[in-house]
Length: 211
Image (cartoon, rainbow, N blue to C red; front, side, top):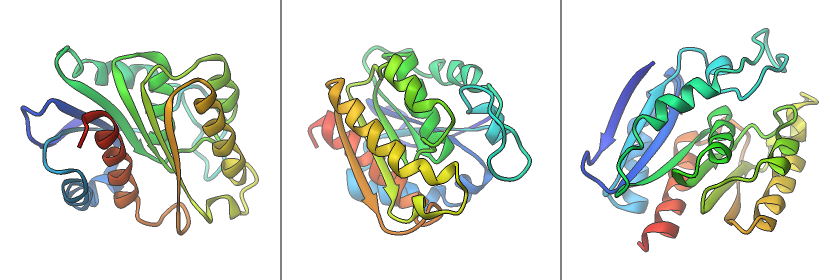
């Protein structure tokens, strides 16, 4: 796994994000949008995973598109992220897009070190995840959720449950007493991923930094 860093190395606010090659291709756009919306006081640490379906999946599940099954490498990836969360004077947020958004929600259930979770268009259709949230509350102070308004209109029967799942997850997180929002964006899952992720982190920064 390769690590890429952006922003201010000495910032109190540390954002952590799992990425792949596609994410890295528009990372400059995400950083630009994040700086414009939230200011430049942040440090973003991105971890490029080797296998998207394996390294950030919380447990094994059959493929729902293509031929690549989901693995159970999230635990190891989380341990790598936690290695960057050792300063008690820093504020740590974890976030990401799509399956990385799901990974971030799962990570928020594992450790209280993350004060905020930025889950942009998260893959909450993932088999068994909503039931997992019911039994394992998120330990962060704040959670941002978003979804495109056409994401649940896919022909894929598993992924088409994403709308109902995120609505249920949102109500569940609110019932757990978390500061939480659910934002609906225009378009399908592949529209404006950079901007959606930037908005997710911006919401956390404004909620928990007083900006």
